[in-house]
Image (cartoon, rainbow, N blue to C red; front, side):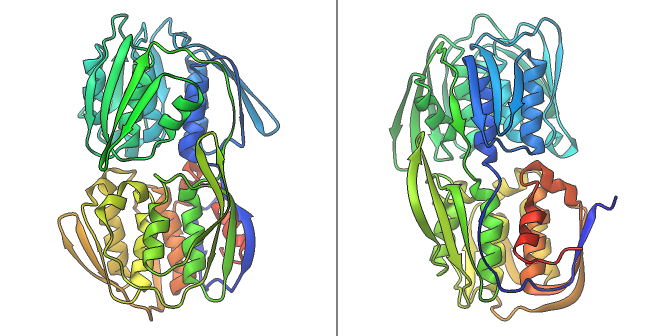
Length: 441
């Protein structure tokens, strides 16, 4: 079965109301926290992507059973000491940095050695950002060349730590928070602003947590050891998946879309703020609060006149997974768009910043790069007619989806490889595109 697609024509005008796949960040956190709860947890609308399925397999290897009943996953936990690790275990995280980093935090009291492995892409990523703080708790933890495989042997004598997280990484912050619930005393984290799903989960589960919000960082205190009861959770739609369809609509002709029931957590909507600065006029409708998370329907129409943006660096962390499609909007906008300190993009599933700039060069968009600072010179009249092939991007799901959006809105004849990469986060992406009228061979 072929693992590439072909796109040979622009998408035709559409007006639709749809839903997108469930939030990946929340899906993984809900599975891992359910594994630590006392009693049964019920998780509805769980994202059934490869990253989340690897999370379910991981907790099962650690002695936590689950079953699926229609649209509900039931997970039976035994508390914060409930993992059954009577001999060495090997946990495979696939392509999921979230799973690998967060589950390491839950293994700080493992009685036997646990090895965490991943695919080729994940194995290259930096794990010192979690191994260093986790060592301070008193665990024995080692990596291979600062990446995977990672081996960890927990301790019965964990000690709370003071930790400064200055990368704006929710994965690193959450890994430390997960370790803190197993540690006697108060762990203090000074964290650069990043997505706060773990903090909201802790509050919802009545895990002792105190948060002092400053302008550029948060002071988070977690008191452990902290057991909590099983819970029920209905996972909302993913803003990262939603972003590809928003940009598709924005760059298409005479189109509009309403994407229903999307998580619009303020730490995740950097793309909305940036696109609205570019005159997109994206609107939230039917807003509500669910377990601390903001949920809304998102509406946008096509926009003929987009303008360049001087992107505030303060929005980087809240748009870190969406910059690829933001670059596409910058390519179409009138004027120059400026982005600063985007080096973190090169530490994702692939060197995304490097690949994205090669992509812009391929389609004839001018840009200037000074280290991790980028200026993109937009071309409002961009209309492609050549043949383009996209491959060798380390099977990065977001590169694949960005390429599809460019093909459907800029023109040209495209062959885009590694379609199976979307199984990581948005398995029904191509199905949604076809529902909107996109012709994909």
